[in-house]
Length: 118
Length: 108
Image 1 (cartoon, chains in turn red, brown):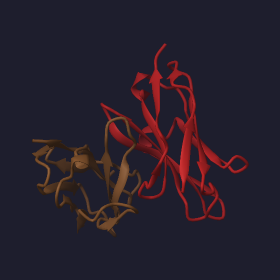
Image 2 (spheres, one colour):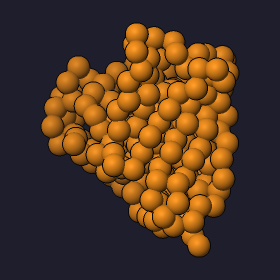
Image 3 (cartoon, chains in turn blue, purple):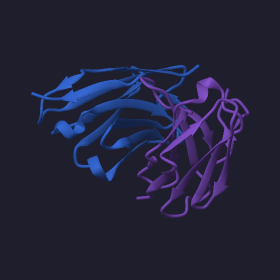
């Protein structure tokens, strides 16, 4: 059974970088038919897909236009995990952040509440 | 970007009744990469339907999906107490992969 375990801080100061990690068990981040995503949810923006990483003989990334200038998603094959880095955060980035596997998102992490506040 | 709208915003029904939820896309979702999710408070969304009409693993057969192009429907044939939740549609055919705003199914 695939499990995704998220970790990272719940409070980030404005202008700093939000960093979260999603550890994978029961699958491999580098499996060449898998896709690994970050999604967030807030009352003002609803569910918002942020981006993904996947391996198809080489690594690819795909990001939402709304965050493209600020986001990086990195795989870590040595730890079988992937990470989200969102820089220059503002209070508008306050949300519950989820990692998820798939094109349709069959497996989800538990969610991390991230508040952007000084 | 494909915008998804869902109707109604809220559906008030009794256990045992049939629920019909709609999702409309601003442009055609080619090859029907359309999914439905159920979300309960404090939980991550749960995949119910993918490919517009295929049930995900472990999903009861009272949940069914249909539609193509721009118009999609999720039907719950007979509501069980655990089905009262918020339901979202999502398209994964064209990046960015967008979600609808949700339909809340509550107890009448």
